[in-house]
Image (cartoon, rainbow, N blue to C red; front, side, top):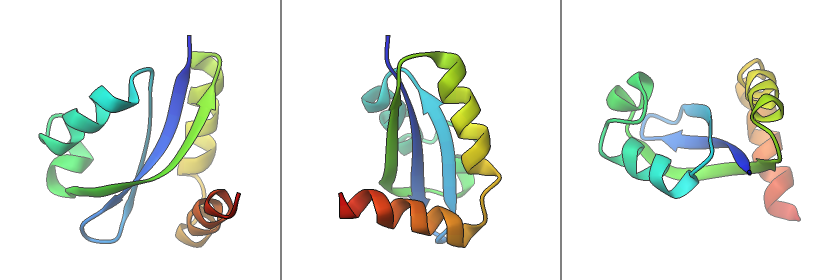
Length: 84
């Protein structure tokens, strides 16, 4: 089974990081305000970054790593993915 780690760009310019096994459904939940407490008050504008993992534990580990990054480091990660 595949798991995704993703970052959303929110309307206030902040980033939300999460993981899921169904990215399409999770995006729908965020858009409806039912995805996470943070995205209820910081409406998501678009999906900014995605990584694919083959296990839940790897996805959770990566999510924690990304959440610890500074805003600038997150931006660099997004830019590096868009270059490839």
